[in-house]
Length: 390
Image 1 (tube, rainbow, N blue to C red):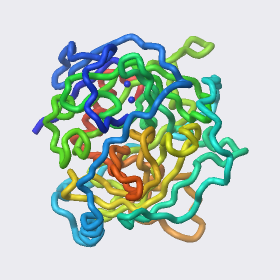
Image 2 (image 1 turned 135 degrees about the vertical axis):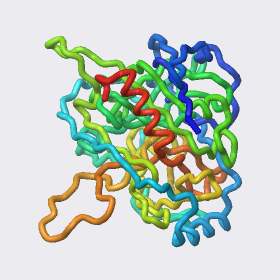
Image 3 (image 1 turned 90 degrees about the vertical axis):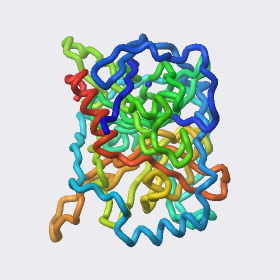
Image 4 (image 1 turned 30 degrees about the vertical axis):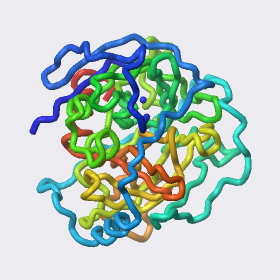
């Protein structure tokens, strides 16, 4: 079945509650581009200091028993393994050139030693969550961290925030629920992406959005979902950045300075049993008031009964929605006495944070899987419309 795409000419994080069609939302006045609906809009002013995290979509149906069943199933080949092998596109380190902007401090986050303990919640899914920021070292300015960032946008007149990351020099990936309200044929507005955001400072500037793309099934509300609008197959969106002009007059994109991640699809990065180990990056408001980038490392398990979403243990919450789930995160070492393992592609995004639990004691999250029928379709469409961004 062909996946139609809705695209909006400018971007965003999750919705746990239904939002009435707010003033300032982008309606379905779109032009058709084959299977893509395109809406071009002008940028809007957001309030960086007063931005609130969008409520995290929650899935009450994922029980402790279900979590244990998924772990057990992970050691058997899951159904639906694609006949065609997984694929990926490589990332890039970038130049590291900065264009720092002070956006104003959100609050006064604690400077206590970050929690680096091995943790798990009542669902017994282990994880380790800690600041990605290694103060006083500006980790947010180093690759691969700097390819992730905060995403600010408007719901009506109010500013909200998500997490997102670069997967091409001018393409950003986030969750679809950061872009459009499921089944409401409505986009949000005024998106601005801030790579490497750190406590009110934008070291690589702020970037407006030229176009946003989600699959038509999500836009129309017909996507396959274990819980409609929350646990879905295609909670994925791709955003095209507006370029800027350098001093020599040549256009450039954020990723040329920050670099960008590779991304994989159709179970790239997973074992044949549907298991992976990944790093989740985001800006949850429940940790350091959303002022610092956070990193979570955990085992990911594919849940066939949860729209094939990837389930992980995590300490994150609202504000981290749309943040990347990355395999082989970090700087790849030179091999001086061993060979690479399978699926060794570094810094490969295989999904984005989509939902969590209603119970704070549970400590787990889920992500729609990257497939050739969602991320590949979205990226290919964006690159065709904006080839210079890819």
